[in-house]
Length: 304
Image (cartoon, rainbow, N blue to C red; front, side, top):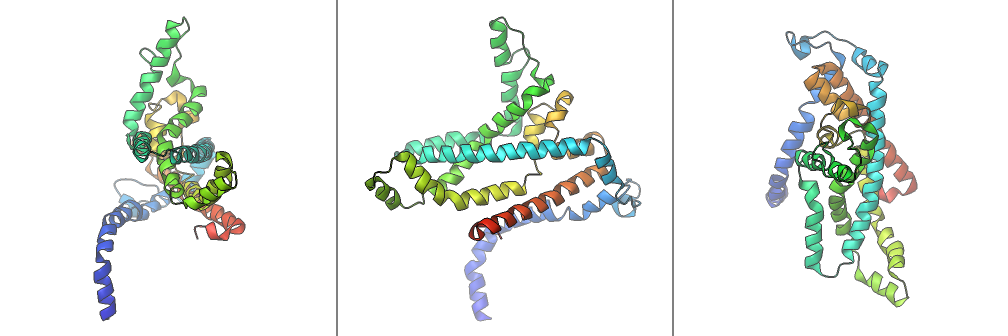
């Protein structure tokens, strides 16, 4: 007992440090769990959650009988697949370039500059995008009209937005991704590179034979975590950046925005709960599947 008390006293600081994060996790992720019952109810405010009549799987049937389920699932998954691929490639590339900077002060300045978009709120990003795409005063349309061409109504033309959203996401994420990979690169022992130089390896060979293989555990871990959130989308990116334009819904509507619009704008609480539950269950299955595949290929690099 005395040993346990001494150990607790020794580690109490770490528990206190973790307390705010655990509290947030409990409030944000665990307290709402009983509300999942709404997905199986015909909710009305008079009877409340628990006294409202049961609806079985009717809310799920409504979701899948319409075209909405296909559109929001397609958009959420395909965008996230592109985001995961590009963010990984650009993040690793940026990290390697930063690691090649010998001046530590210059490297730190670049890291701060690259991280700024990740720290900017989606509202600010949406206005920055609007300053480029606005019909009347947007920079791109001003250049088009100045050259005698017709201005483009960006917020009603859906064919441009898959590219716009991908560019904005990469711009916003590259700094954060680069810092994660850079933290692994700087921990690589310099003796590996020194031995490679002695053997006559050029920079590209050092990257492909040393840096990338040693980055493999970090890459797998970050990709697995991203796959676990493949059914979640950046709400600000898909809702605020396109300015909630109805004409763009076919290419900007994801599960998160669908749930929000159903809850706030349409008041369909039960259908929103069904969509949210569908999102959670499929996301859970995907992360288990991805981890299982990694375990089959390289057991040591699996999350569990």
